[in-house]
Image 1 (cartoon, helix red, strand yellow):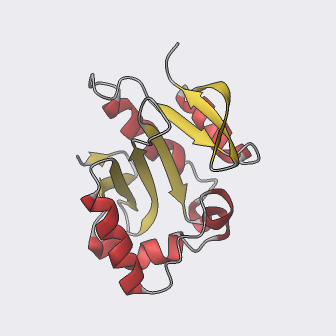
Image 2 (cartoon, rainbow, N blue to C red):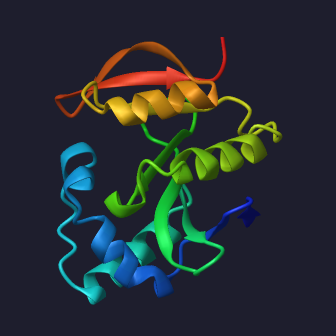
Amino acid sequence: MNFTTERLLINPLSENDAIFILELVNTEGWIKFIGNRNINSENDAIAYIRRINENRNLTYWTVRLIETDVAVGIITLIKRDYLEHNDIGFAFLPNFSKKGFAFEATHKVYEELIQTNEYAKLLATTMPENINSIKLLEKIGFYFDRIIENDKVVLLLYKNFK
């Protein structure tokens, strides 16, 4: 699935995104809130993208600026073993935060997904200290459900349904 907003192109993650992924997964925010993926080269990034694209429980989209075709972030849809419904997520390069891109892209993908029966119910998880993520989830229409723990990590669980 491809999506477009006023400022953004949102397309499935591809191996052509390797340099961007290498940069993104090594940002301070990714490592702090998502975890170190040990992606240290373009080849590591290509292998990482292949693993994502071969896993039917993972869907990643690259978010690009229409004006420059520069990759600025990703939107993810993950079916996690410990969650009943798919988990929507997002990560953006620090230089492109606080510009509304994360909201614009995530909201567009969210709106398209909930139109289908398969994705009408979505979840989102975040660490309690990730205030920006919490604000974005609430702005999109998710609300706090409960605190969960996975692999000894405390997470806030948000959902879009009652």
